Image (cartoon, rainbow, N blue to C red; front, side, top):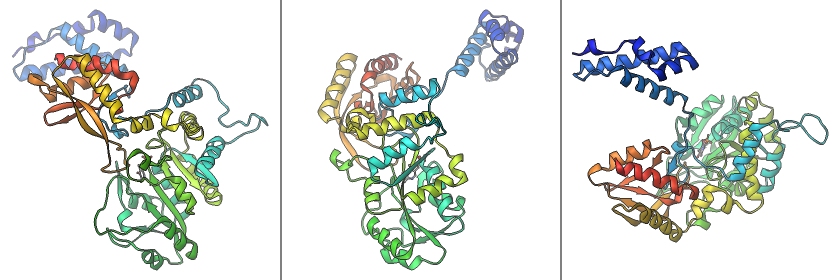
Amino acid sequence: MQFSNLPSVDSVLSKQEVAAAAKSFDRNWIVDLVRDELALAREYIRKGGVSPNADDVAEQVCNSIQAAIQTEPRRVINATGVVIHTNLGRAPLSRAAVEASNHAAQGYSNLELDLATGRRGSRQAKLQSLLCQITGAESALVVNNNASALLLGLSALAAGKEVVVSRSEAVEIGGGFRVPDVLRQSGSTLIDVGTTNRTYVRDYDDAVTEKTAVFLKVHSSNFRVEGFTAEVATADLVEVGRNSGVTVLHDVGSGSLLLTENYGMTHEPTPQESIKEGVGLVFFSGDKLLGGPQAGIIVGKKGLVDQLARHPLARAVRIDKMSLASLTATLVHYLKGEAEKEIPVWRMISATALALKKRAKSWQSALEWPSTVDKSRSTVGGGSLPGETLPSWVLSMDCGETGVVQVMRRLRESRTPVVARVEDDRVLLDPRTVLPEEDATLLEALRYALAG
Ligand SMILES: *Cc1c(COP(=O)(O)O)cnc(C)c1O
């Protein structure tokens, strides 16, 4: 055992860089970092390791300081081919959306000031007019995210009353968001009707009592029930609701404003069609297929939206100014008919297989490493279009002696971390989700990873 060789706290603190850090940072914190490193060293020696010297420990302390002051989340390159990747921050924003949010952040803004009158204005006004124009709704309200939108809607309209949900739709969306739990939290009672695979109009009809406030329809965004199934069409549910005086709420999940069938995928329900069919309120996310920042969007009948806006929870789940600014800019792309061209998730979805093949080939020739360019599939992800894929081409790398686990790790450890995919003992990189301006950085990370 080499405990006697272990440097003292003071000898590490007297190393030039550590001493400098102790001056500029909180000294007690730096002393704690030194102690933590020495404790690790003791553990290492106990297991038969060689004692580090004061320089080694000082270097570790400096690494800890660097890690502590590194801001998070860091920029990461998404080479997985999953367009809306929840772990990687869902939708990347358009240039205009980023600029809008920077403007809102950097200076003061007319967030709640009506410039025409000089009086207090509403932060929702602009979003409201854009959303009404785009979806055909009477009114709109935007909050922190779709989960809070739904909680607000149920709290304002159904607390102390009953909410009828099909058994096939009382689902878990992911990350602890379960429809029955949200209902309970809102103070309403879940009445589940039908069966897991089949629910009919009469199931809703039969469930109506004097306590029924809402029929809630939830889009099964992250799974698919196949085979002997039946679900009630939105229009039919609206009809039952109208006859029995029950409000219909529709959580469409990803809230695609463009028609996904035009991009070779199955149809994803759009807010526009729910509004057209007469739904009371439609709920959707800002950062899934809409391609904007995290937000929960509610569109629908004015009387209902007003009820939500007046509820105390509305303030608790209010949208912040930066998200509001970037969401506004994102919606303007739809108004101008340039969504496919300007919004990154739609640019990625609409990229042709040929264009992707060309990019994968260009990476291949720049890299000079044993690899092939192969046909593959990308996915949309992010709780939309389960099982749907888009034809793509990937750079498929033979990792040789180094092995895929090590190459994947080194990709994550490179200056700009890269997240890729492993299939059949090869590392695959899908150009669909790599932004065009990231090509050079990606190649740099690949060279670093393969050199290890
Ligand atoms: C993703 C999703 C939610 C949750 O939306 P967040 O914006 O992540 O809060 C709710 N309902 C459905 C159907 C979803 O797909």
